[in-house]
Length: 333
Length: 225
Image 1 (cartoon, rainbow over the protein chains, first blue to last red):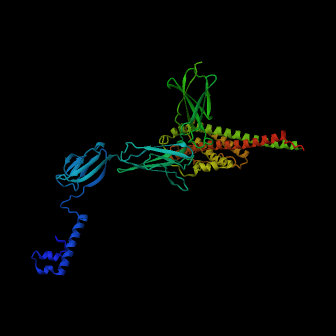
Image 2 (cartoon, each protein chain N blue to C red):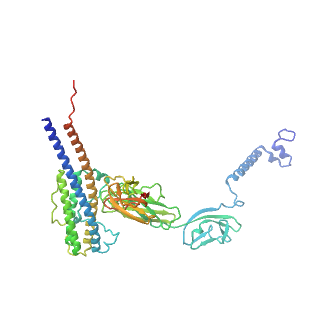
Image 3 (spheres, rainbow over the protein chains, first blue to last red):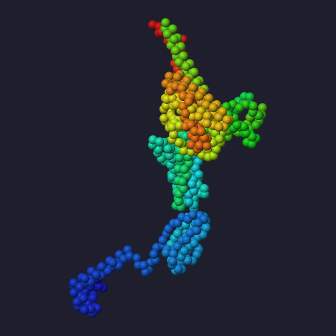
């Protein structure tokens, strides 16, 4: 310690000025006292860091998320569900007084952030309520735009689950020597379309495609048997060109869809549709195995919309969608 | 003498090209017959399933395939890489084995069918199948591939049972037509591939012939000293 004159003053002389007993000034006792004071100071300092004084600071509110099926009823207790005087609020507005919140015949509008408060207004709990549906067995459709190398399966859910839902997609062919379960290739677990690549052609026993939907409210599975040769569906032909020829003829030419990997061995046949009168009247010509055709006997001054579709040459599977229309108007003379 | 030798060589090459061209025409006819049979089968199958009655006539019905000797048809199922790699002879041999069994199976189906119209259709179909089998055997002979001989006419491919209301017999009939359908689809692709392969072979022999002809008519001139 330093006195007013700037010289050091011992603790003992300070204490002597207060008329205290002599034994209190013994060196050993003084050392012990100093040590004790330091220990108390350190303990007080660390108690601020690690030990919460519950008598003056309230417990932190609990936060959780709950998934509820639309149309169901739910009871939401605040804490132990027995504390009287608590109230539930939603988005900050008072909803109901009582320790348990009952929601009947829930709907999408019940989704939100619910908070539970003590009688003195303290925040006890925060509840995120997510509304949605458990998955239903997916409605699956498969087709092969790249026969014989690939097939595609896509699926939908009715009703839409609303909640984040992921899918497991596999397929299996019951080969006697070594049946394998293959993963149906997708970009991500939430994609609703996948690609099958190891296909058995001309099989009498179908491939089995298994699509399982999973979300927080449950799971559902669909198993679809498919014969690859039955589900051929090429993409529409491309590069459709229409040119006028002498004698009121139209020369139409096209190319096979690039997604069809082998048009030489797996030949396609084509149909050509001519529409006119604002597309109210149509005639379809074909099938052709060639990549062009000529139509004659057309009406001068008429506008034609021409489209082409492709199909397996044996008529297996389905026809493609029609290509984008090409429009041409015949001269009047 | 040189000219005579060149002419003989040209004739031999020309003979080979003509033979290949004939084979290609034969494959074309076999391919067209396959398409015709496939078209016929579509109609027969619909009528036959109605004849069998429910549940066979239900659109999505598919009974398990029985593992019995009576349905010992070689499977048409294949992977695309294996299918592409088949040699011409092996490809034709697989078709011949399958249709030998299927012909007997369809004959038995016709025999046990009580509906006269359906029986007549099935027997007519058997004639077409027999023609297809003969065509395949002819192709194999032309290409120098060993054949298995003529299909036995009386080999019972289906167990003889009198009652049509026997469910197992109906399942057998269902599966005979399904196997037949798969094979016709497969055969159409097989013959398309054979056509393309033989066209390439004819083309290469035609080029050889033209080259030989040019050499004969325009021999290379010697340089003057």
